[in-house]
Image (cartoon, rainbow, N blue to C red; front, top):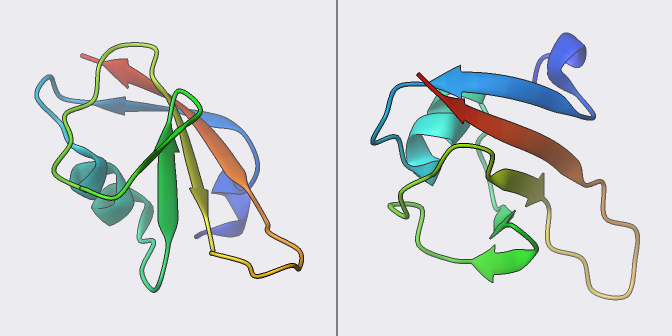
Length: 75
């Protein structure tokens, strides 16, 4: 993820966007976990709604997890 997008940020995506569209837009790749509104989501084809809170993080087993919180704003 580009340095300027780390942490919390709002992202504008077209209506009908899915988690995969967000990951592609951010350039985020690799073994990741995602959560929408504090619920883990494994299906990256899950549609996003206005004001959804998306968290992207690397799975951790008893260690540190660097969370990224995003607020989706549909156009």
